[in-house]
Length: 143
Image 1 (cartoon, rainbow, N blue to C red):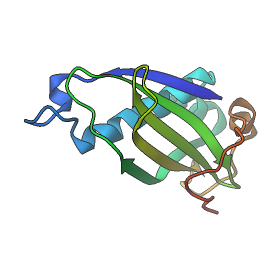
Image 2 (image 1 turned 180 degrees about the vertical axis):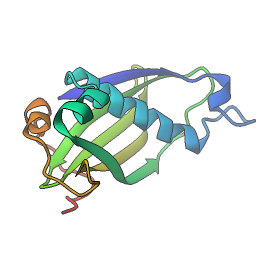
Image 3 (image 1 turned 135 degrees about the horizontal axis):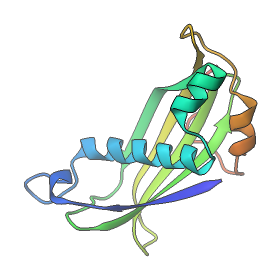
Image 4 (image 1 turned 90 degrees about the vertical axis):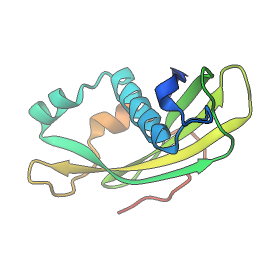
């Protein structure tokens, strides 16, 4: 499953030169991950309350390829790259709307934890909602 999130770059996303600040890209990833889980029908507060499981971000890697600028219209593609025993890898690609060139490539590794904050298996409901697409993950599984 792939989700595409539109992003419009506003002035407070940028530095004095009109270039998107590197810290804002991390926020874009967070919004993208939320959009992905929402598209799968999940509200995390409900998942925690009803299933006693949640995820935490274990690792983030971002590769800045070209700058985004003030008032750019961007599209963030988000997809699940792999599921491990206790982890899920999510890949992100950021482009200007209607352009092929990548501005950013990123990966997040999520680890699932139970109510005692101990690692637990990836819930089947997430595996079912987010089947892995046939592509190579940027990061290998974390056990």
